[in-house]
Length: 160
Image (cartoon, rainbow, N blue to C red; front, side, top):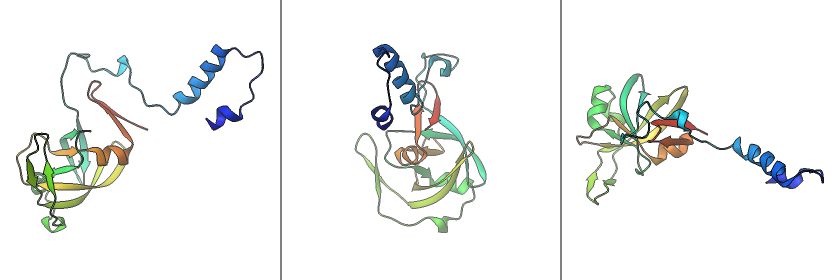
């Protein structure tokens, strides 16, 4: 808005031309998806969005991106597989609730170094001792920190 308020616009500039110029200015700061980003099967899927990430020094597949989750989740079994010392888990009294309202007490929380592409994040994960269908869950805390825009339709994440 500052740019538009301070810009000099010649009198002979049409409204349509001015609109085109302003759209280009705003487009620079917009994250968008297009049909070119669709997976091979197009829109005919109902897949969750999974990523392969580097967690600490290991590659972890099946990291679920879930913008419906208010926490990042790491199953205790994954920490064991990654050979991460359980002494790093900070005990807490957090109860993680599912969409049905049921709750699960956490083992605690842990700070983990997660690398996605070329970007490294040190994120807090709630550790749960439960069987789940993912290896890590990247919820809104990660999405907001990463300034990520996930699209399950396009099966990808883009960054601001």
